[in-house]
View 1 (cartoon, rainbow, N blue to C red):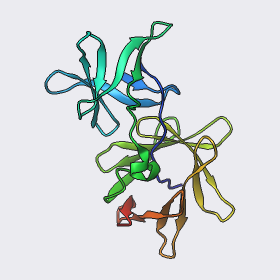
View 2: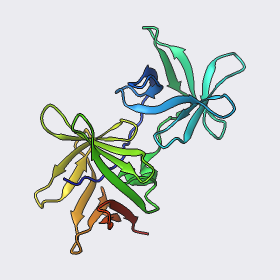
View 3: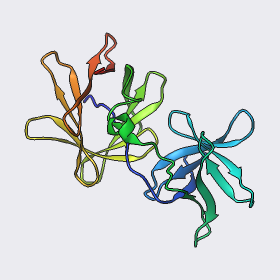
Length: 220
């Protein structure tokens, strides 16, 4: 089965730190979905990076010695504190969010920003999950089965996007957790998979290269 990977969307009101399987400190939202990973940059500063390795926040201390997170524009987007149970949490400030605006990427339907060609590769992990990687080896999507046998989709950071289904016309559709349509995929007369957003607008197509890899080609 060939699967094409979207990314997640949504926001949260509080973030927590947790240690992942590899011993790395990660920042997760209220549902436990990974937002980013904590690491040191070249200058020794503590930063939060997303699944693509891009810095989304830098940890600093303000005038009052509070630990804060700033975005690349220097705007405070979160303040660190402890919750009732003693967990370290990040509370968003000024209506800011650590999560990307997925609508800038067509609701996160395609890998990358949807503006350039991306080669994807598919493999299966030891748990039977289908992993989608880009040409740099970065995970851009994970397809797994829930206890009811539904195909659940996660992005490269582990955020749950929704479920994959087939509509009455045989098209592959993706719905969020509320059952709202995110994307539709159908096959054209040339055998390419056409990707549309929730409004039916064509975003691009997936073609198969000579090595059997799926290649996303944007519409514009």
